[in-house]
Image 1: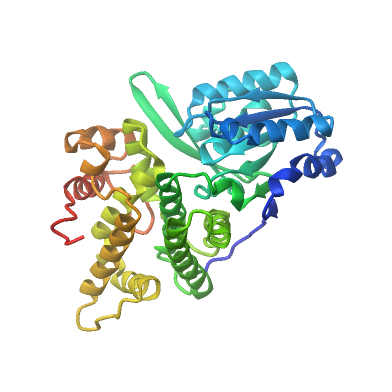
Image 2 (image 1 turned 90 degrees about the vertical axis):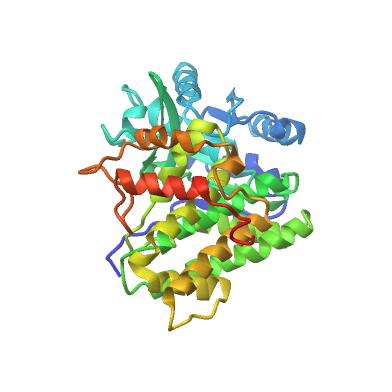
Length: 406
């Protein structure tokens, strides 16, 4: 295990009807965070249709919080809305941001918080040209269990640069929201597809940390494995009954634990699958979780021989597959198959065909990824260069669930 520092700076308010306490919670922290004027950031319509937006605005008015609004944040959030939010914050002298939604809304709020107090281009932070040193404080009211952005240090934004879409992330402690309000009842109205995408997303966050070259991390291994098993179990319960509060609650809490880095301390992390997927969702405008269900098993299939014992451990501890000591590769392959089988059971895509992607676009995807054969690579578990990434995309493109008897 490596040395580490870990600070869980987000204060969680978790439980049924906690969204009714937003005004009160902000009032309790008004002096601490110097809240004078709020930017309310939200999505394209569900918060309006459900009445949640009017509820939150009513609470802000009740507790005398002036606010301005930035609406219509889309999945795969864009720099265009971030620039709009930064301009609004500077003009209106906003000093606090409240994000109402899922990962795309919260990531947009985080990017705005970095850019509002900076004189340059916020996207410099995402291109690693500069490091942020200050930000506005952000609070979140979560409406989907998925990205874990409500308490993570990461943020992903995409920007059109010429004829190229760049989708990339910025990770900094400044990105962690100071308050996360998690009410599982807000996820009752999600479609099965949205719920399933969230399940894949949180599982991927755990697996990016689980597949590591760092030894001696048994505590975090066991935490990762338990979370994965719990997510799988509760996902099935939610699909049987969308109004199962305990199942919804467990998924929402799992999403936070999957990405607040408690499962990643003391170990090298990978993140190649996420970066490979970012190009898919940027090019085809698909849900991040849907892209991950295609890419992650393909990545696993390509790299498992690097540490076949770890993949056997994954198969055994997460999917209860007996380890065949005479054929470890077979056990590892069964674990990958079991993951695909679970994704299929919740109607997630498994191949390029399932997301209307084309094998002919692989050269473009690799170009967008920015890897080469010499210096620029992806991942840490296995360093992936251009040919490696092409092969992973090809596995994803050519996978046929019928040949796998799924």
